[in-house]
Amino acid sequence: MTSDAVPAALRAAGRALWVSVTGEYDLSPGELSVLEQACRTADELDDMAAALQGEPPLVEGSTGQTKVHPLYGELRQHRRVFDALITSLALPMPEESAGRPRSAQARRAAKTRHDRDARRGLRAVGGA
Image (cartoon, rainbow, N blue to C red; front, side, top):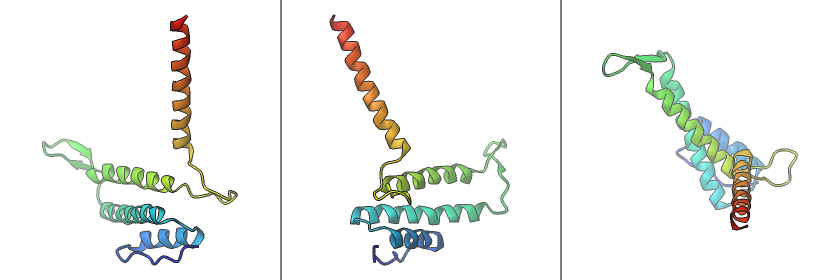
């Protein structure tokens, strides 16, 4: 387990995530940096959720049109960033002894293999 202190700037959600992960896993300095960014993102997600409390989901745009509250788009983007940061840590699942990249990375690797094999197949056909 890592004994690194919780970064001072983290708030409730970020602190909880930091303590949870560092209490369970030994992380390298690079992984701690990624974890800190994930924790900051968790705090920002909490901020945006709090800002949306009591706000209508639809608001009036600059020309009077009805549109989705802009914070919903930011919330969606922050969720993607959070997911990417957590995924990049490749923390092991409870039944694993070591972490591994998850499905998005595995799909990219499979696509690369598929594309490579397809190019090889096309060359063989074209060269015959």
